[in-house]
Image (cartoon, helix red, strand yellow):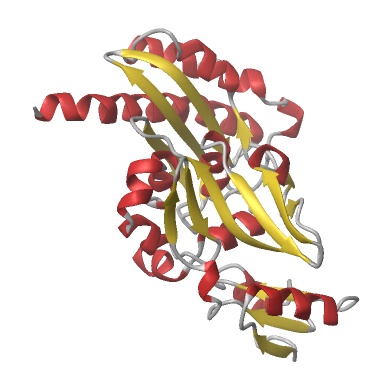
Length: 296
């Protein structure tokens, strides 16, 4: 199918993009990032914007930079560019692990970090990673910049705290030097999206987990933290038994009435998958933590 007619504008800067959002207020305006979600929706008629604002040439929205205790990821940074950035692998291991599992090489070469988070698809790979990374999402609108903690950003399925006259400009992640990250997911065989995905960020001292954050996507309408799993694994080491025990608490933090139930998986099956993939993510993180010692 062909999309309906629309006006097209190329934003020259963040300020210009904000101006365009204000100029066409009252009409349906869509921001074009990587386009992997928007363009198929337009072709099938699920989305029919009056105005399309292309952010591709806005240089200030691209790139990965470490500044003191913060890693800044431009909203238009492509997945592949983040994976190529030494600073991202070093300072944001949970985000990097999740990005590595997004789609395939073609998707990673065009899709963007900010587009993924702003679209807020519950089956996308990054919401859980943003939560465990304690990320802050920075938006800009006519009144200037606004910082939104990841835990307050996601409202539900395809819903975020972004206002209609705002755009996401960057993602700020506290530097996690020495931490290890992992991401384990059950991909949809048809789309590659996560039926269930679990992100883990661990601080490990020797064989002891001193701090843990665990989050998931694909469970309910938005990414969620799993503090019961994190609490169960902190203060001890990770082996098959401890990982299984901690993972068995994954559903403690989820309202079973809110579990997603669709053609991909029932809510009951998702609850089972959540425990399985929480265990796998913990074991992958433990393996990552032990890898440098094993290599010496």
